Image (cartoon, helix red, strand yellow):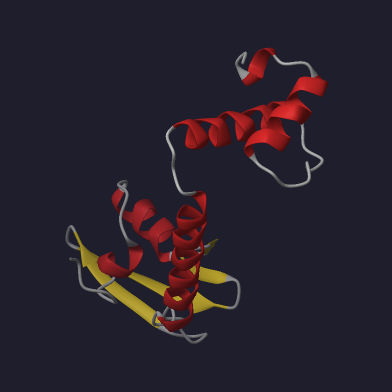
Length: 134
């Protein structure tokens, strides 16, 4: 059999039926070719796809459980102030409804404020002492 990239549309349909054994979905030709190549390789290498898809499903379930059980991101109440001394100067940042207010300008994140102050990339919560560095 030719490689999937060189097959005609009719031959692609036959290859799909041979390797995938499911109804052919409406996909772009390039994506269909990739799927067929992957299934063909799995078929030739005698990979048990049921086991593979079972593991894939289990992994997705584990990811969903993790997302549901992970601690929520800390959010700060409006009006909360962060004060930090850096290079002999003191900096004050206030939490406002749409971000953080520093020196009359609004920033989307504490990291952006820390970058403005230091000129370097920082984790804003670490810079302002809200979170311990690992």
